[in-house]
View 1: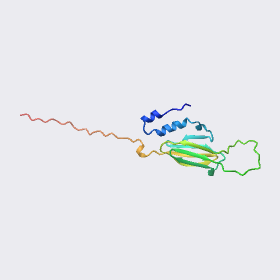
View 2: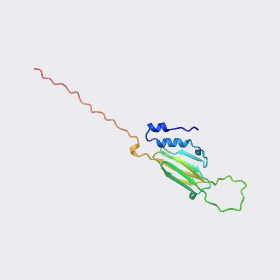
View 3: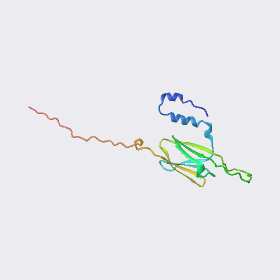
View 4: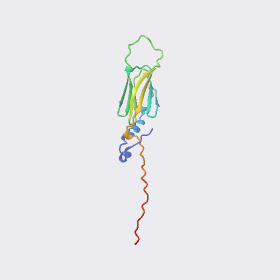
Length: 154
């Protein structure tokens, strides 16, 4: 993917720095990681859910942080004692991971739960009342009766 130079746009725009940074980060190759797999779904008008497949991790080995429009999920396996068993094939990953999600303005984490190897993170877009669109009623001017011109004839 080509690198796009946004510097000419910085001269003519105000307040779009975060957008340009996000666009730049999309072009970086580290965004191509595939572990762990995840889904992002819309569960309502202003609610979302991120579901991550974190089989083999328990609550103590996972951490979730939301800071400055970034949701960061980390998983670190605790050291297991050396076993006498020998693996013939090891397909269950025990590697640590770190996954970041860019959050839009006014999106906050509501809850997180771990069930059957799936980590569910519920998000809510909570737009402040001052930023919500509001309907402005149009008041009609009261209709007045036309005034008659009075004239005195002499």
